[in-house]
Image (tube, rainbow, N blue to C red; front, side, top):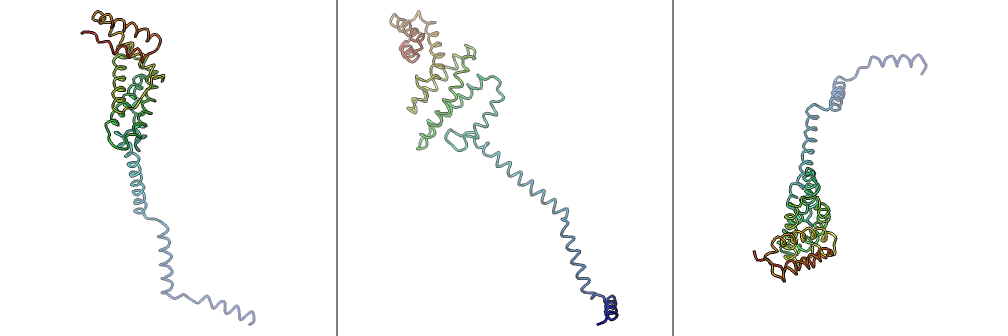
Length: 238
């Protein structure tokens, strides 16, 4: 084929027109593709609603453990959430001594509830509760000296009575005489007991007076448990 013939045939191709049905079909396909590439407003809106729904569910799931942890006891799954709640609540208590005493009272109340629980899990909870109580006792014993004397006597008496009652129920030692916390707390308690008995010394017989003098000597020697035993033996008449 010569060059002239080839050119003529190529020019003849210009007159060829596509089938009308095929052209319409291709045009429709192109338009549909463009439409699919641009998401509609309703689709975007539904996506936002879906994200908001997931966010709401996540918030509810995050809050639920804290709501159910209100009555959790040491050794239970939700107890950690309860401690977080407490730290937020106690953050509004400015006085450190009031805060430490409030935490100690909470721990003692938990131990009291555990002591009333039957079942095999009591031992595990009791061990966890005693651990938490000792930590609270350590903090409270350091702050008790800052409490006004008029309030301290009543507060320490309440703490000692709670500890004694729980130890009697559970047959477990919450605090031993060798521990520093025992010395710090019972020092205030015994000092108050001596003061109260001295106020009624006129009603004591000679034997009771001798016991009181001995208890005071033991107190000065920081032998608080022995002093307390002697004081319990003194029963003033009125």
